[in-house]
Length: 113
Image 1 (cartoon, rainbow, N blue to C red):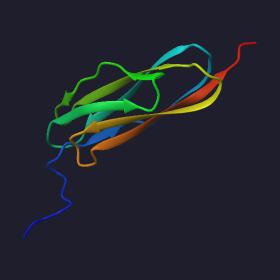
Image 2 (cartoon, rainbow, N blue to C red; image 1 turned 90 degrees about the vertical axis):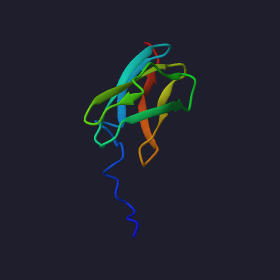
Image 3 (cartoon, rainbow, N blue to C red; image 1 turned 30 degrees about the vertical axis):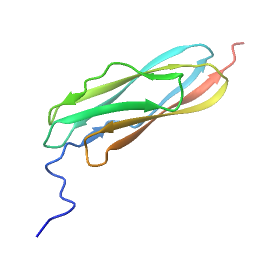
Image 4 (cartoon, rainbow, N blue to C red; image 1 turned 180 degrees about the vertical axis):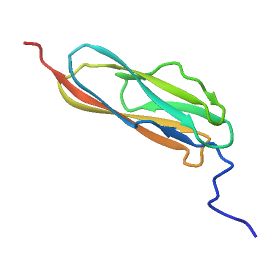
């Protein structure tokens, strides 16, 4: 008999927050944020790659191998270019059962008075 759905032996990534709202910022500003997480699984978590939906949002260096019960963070740099509300999507690919986690960086770029 094969048991399916028992994920206790896999790495599992758990983010303290998946959405970061940076509020209002001025145009042509660079903001750095950190998405903090923990490997709550029983195996080593391997971050395979991180992608974003815009060249204005760039992942910085991050630890690629996280032991069970250890914490890590993914640093993201955002360069505001346009005006108005924005949502930047960040995809984190790993060896967890879910394989992909979606993070969101949002805010509003305002005009200077």
